[in-house]
Length: 273
Image (cartoon, rainbow, N blue to C red):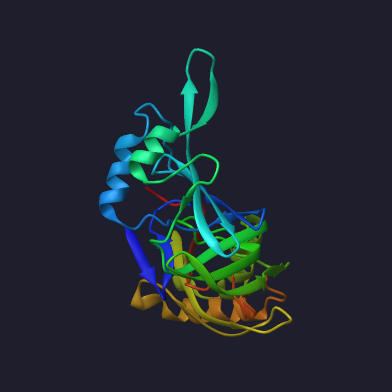
């Protein structure tokens, strides 16, 4: 399903997706989004693709589109699919033929591609290392990202960003999570109520963090109302840890799990069934 948020072309998938490819004045970038917005066109593309092509959770649509921007004009260069030979146990890659592309896109030629004027909005493109992985769609962040403003396939504006990450404590790191559990248990072992729980779940959100990686404010909750005092203790533990991992995304300092984070660990040994 296509979604337009703030004019940016994004695609909703439950798993991180392989990016499409775009060459901007000869330089290769990852295209983070889908430009085919017309449902009829999407259906016709799917019907034109080889039935035996490889599809995976990282490429639900079963193809990668290749694009280019030349003299500020957007062109569709090719549509590529992966096919797997079970006898040879190897993959091969091929583009849709010129005849097939001409059926889908009038006036297409292999040499010049197809002048694509059906897109207006913002293109998000990226290069470099992944600085923050998100297990959904095209939501991961990369070292270099640019937003291109497009009007009928013409580039009318561009904004460049240098994203980066500062090392520090991270709940996503298994060792750091184990350390957090130890710190929490040391703090709350004075409570006899702790023996009643085999496992505890916490939600961390509304995190405010400074440039030194210090959390200056946050909200910690638990699903059960009778464990609010444990949530308060966890909040204190979290705010005592320094430094936390931080991200600089789009010229702003943010906490990596900026949309909130749920985490859980056993309290008294492993969870009972």
